Amino acid sequence: MNVIETEIPGVIIIEPDVFGDERGYFEETYRLERYRELGLPDFVQDNISFSRPAGTLRGLHYQIAPYTQGKLVSVIAGEVFDVALDIRRGSPTFGKHVSVTLSAENHRQFYIPEGFAHVMLTTKPDTIFSYKCTNVYSKENERGIIWNDPALGIDWPMQDGLTVLEKDQKHPTLAALQSDPKRWEELRFV
Image 1 (cartoon, rainbow, N blue to C red):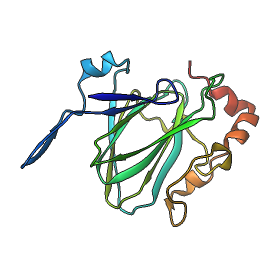
Image 2: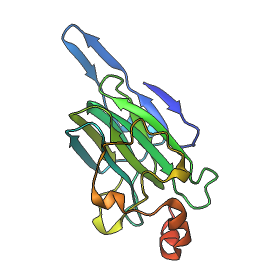
Image 3: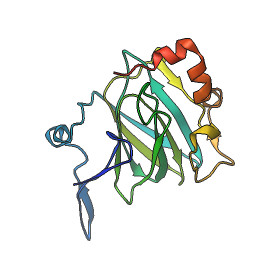
Image 4: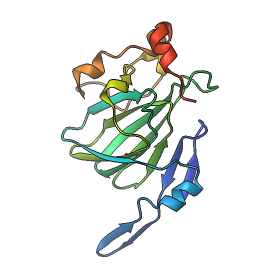
């Protein structure tokens, strides 16, 4: 297993060992002890999403206390452009992001700690996206930031013809979130 540190401490890319032969391949996607040795927390919920068209965008989502979530994400089929945005108040990397392409071919995993907003954009059709979460989903505690906020500087591989839910088109910009005292107060992840 290869671990790649990113420019934001705590956000890592994991390349699991893949053993292939003429039949296909075998990959161990998770072992509790090994991931604990990396300093990752335990996971309590697994999710899978299926996106039929390329250009399906889901995010930028995050959850507030007491339901903050860290995520270990990967792609089972297809490909995604995946982004973690640091929204931890007081963090030296607040407002910075890390992006990575995850695919069935590269087998990469992406760990996104608590205190980050997360978005994925499918770049191939019929994509199956898997994620392990450190806390359960809570609709009441889910929040978001508009995915195409120009101040974030995310270099999207595509922007036209996307499939985006109406709720994800109505999230505030990061600056608007900072200027809203209630929402700003919610960004306490430590």
